[in-house]
Length: 422
Image 1 (cartoon, rainbow, N blue to C red):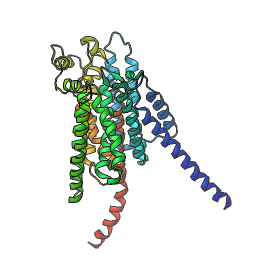
Image 2 (cartoon, rainbow, N blue to C red):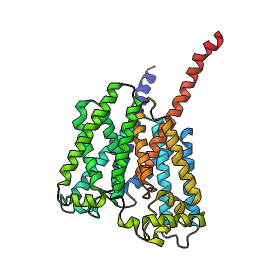
Image 3 (cartoon, one colour):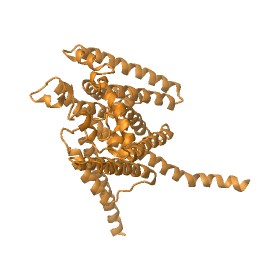
């Protein structure tokens, strides 16, 4: 008896220690996602090791998340087939290796959240910390706050610890939406604690001067507010959402007015605020390349090879659908289109169900919609946070699948007496 009494606490302690180590490892991985100044970034190196170790110790992929794995792998097979169309491979093998790694990262996040839903909160907290840190770097760089701070800018726009402000801005949308969710639904006493990081992240999005990030944040915020309004039947809660939304908008408007008074900001804002830029509408500009690219896709069903389009026209595709056709062929295009449609449909079906993980699904879902919308005007196939969003949504899909399986025996037991009585 004494041996058993000693063994149980030790087993409990070991289980707790393992949970702490695994949670800390995930937290660090998400934290590193906001720092991608060079490639391969620390995030890739760290996460590749973490996924490998987790797989060795029993990473379980839920049956419900299998479509995520199959479609992402099929998409990458399309890329490998497309590579055979190239005369000079150059850096293509490395590019496809990164694509495959990102695919596995999505499956990894789906798998761990499906098994341990408490990781959702940890992931979102780590994401907020990472976003605030990289936003502060971007803001400091924009205002030349210290010597060498300009390394955190590009094209006179805040880029944070990213290579491109057009990736930096969209990266900040999910943590911004999550803080907005907490602001709209949490106690009033927490408002100041939430308002400060939300303003920092919003400032990061603004100073990125990324039209896509601005629109994405606005669309995601509107979708979030609408879903919250529909989800609750309480008139008081709906009134609260409306009042808090008005208060948040007023705060952002005041902040914008103050920011626009700063030297150089107003001019950059007016230049970037136009829907069309000269590089969009030029003779071989972005929009013209769309038409040329889609015509090429009809002639090259296997694609023309990853990154080849940019070497031909001097600019990349700047459209995720065209990117898929050119770099991953029709196989990759159909796989990605199916994955997006499946994710949106399956996520929407469970979006407003009262579950412990529902707030995280809601925030990830509206941010995913924003990213896919933005993908019509920019390449997003190597955006790390897009694969994280996929993982978070499919993790919730797997959790709901398991939840329904657990409910089934209870429903059968409750219906048995009624059948017997009948």
